[in-house]
Amino acid sequence: MGKKRTKKKQIKAVTDRLAEQVQAENDEQLEEKVIVRESISTALNEDYENVAAEDEGLKEEAEEVAAEAPQRPNKFYLVFAIFIIVMSIVGIVSTVQFGIRTVNEIANQTSLKNEIALFLYPVVTVDPPAFKTTKEIPATVVVESAIWRIILTGNNSNYEKLYNTYMYVPAVDVEFSIKTLYGSEAVIQHQTVGSASTAFTYNEDTNTYLVPISPRYTAYSPVVTEISNVGELYTVTVEYMPPAALAMEGIKLDNSAAKTMEYTLSKSRNSMTVHSAKNATQYGDTYEY
Image (cartoon, rainbow, N blue to C red; front, side):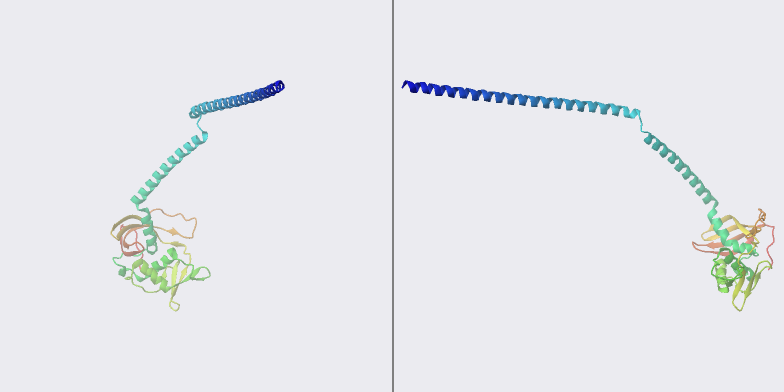
């Protein structure tokens, strides 16, 4: 009985020692975990403090850069601004100049004067006598001015050529040119016209005119100085300038007008028609036909 009690005490003692060892190990492990946890927490806190400090430093640096930026303007933007200012000034000057030219052209009717002068050029170069209606115009003037219109303003490339000096102009083209200048009331009589130096020879058999391709000069060229109109009816003052060299170089031209005529004509959007002509000065003689 006594042996059993002794044995139980021994077993309990061993068990207690084992329990104490286990508890001690558990305490050590718990302490190690606490230490590790504290180390991690400390590291995280240090990293957070470092990051926060870096962020604060970057923020301060950005504020310093922003504060200094206005004191150091970008050269590109400065150059660009100067360029915009210069172009604006150029644009304003160009607009003003264009406006002045437009106003002057409107006031002087430059384009209209040039258009009418070109239309009257074939008539002026023949120098017709004064007439109240186109029926009064001599037939020779009608034909000759119509041929001059073909020479000066027409397309001659399709006409048959002779020695590259003359061209054959069909009478039907001359008739069309007559109606373009004078309307349908002008008298048409096909015949040889012109002068010894510039003759337009009519061939009745072929119904064509033999015409110089490049006449040396015209007797007169027109300069329109004044224009007035009532609706589509225009009255224009035309100065006759002699001579108008067409193919001769080195000729010194007289800048004063030989005579002045006043023409009336009708003008629509796409066409013009001569109606009458009268002397506007007391000097200069018209050609006698």
